[in-house]
Amino acid sequence: MVFESITATLIALLAGYWNTFILFLPRLLGAFILMSVGALFGHLVKSFLKNIMIRYKVEERLFLEKPTFKFTSLLSTIAAWSIYIVFIKAGIDVLGIAPITTVSNEIIGVLPELVKASLVVIIGYSVASFTKHHMDHSRLTYSKVMANVVFFLIIYISFVMALPLVGVETQLLQNLLLVVSGSIGLGIALALGLGLKDAVAQEAKKYKKKR
Image (cartoon, rainbow, N blue to C red):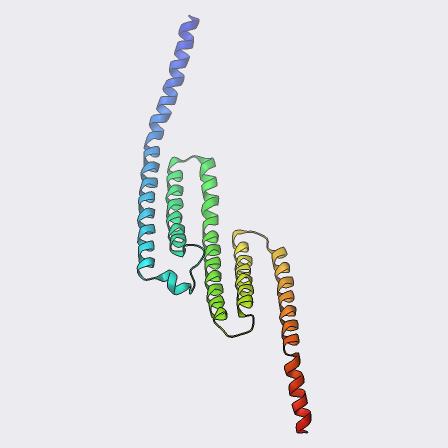
């Protein structure tokens, strides 16, 4: 009697799990199809963007010197993952699992700011590369040293501008930037003052002789 009662309870429990699985199966298949379509679409977009940028030499036009990262790969990867995450989010919504849906909503909320921050850094690197290239090829004294200083300063500024977009506090970095900028300005002023000292003295002598 007891054995029959336990058996009936187990059968009812298994039947309940099976019915739940059968009801959940269409949603699982729908989520799988959505994610598969997203993976395929994202891959196609990545390949298309990469080929277009290579064909029209976008990287060479933006950066006068070869960058330390593959711009075409970075931009196409960002585009692809944006598509992946959107379709993953849609698949999770189809599943209807509340905790996972909440997490995916938070990720989707951060994604636009992350893309903006990446673009700010990329633009900053492009400007820094352009400036460094022209300063390197100028005839100014210590042009290469100044070019490297300006290059890293622009990169630093671009990161300071990008980090708040993803919710990172940058007050300390901003204060440090002011200190560094002031130090660099003072160093340049001293260098110019010492370098032009003799030239100024000569001009002063010429002016006295004329009078």
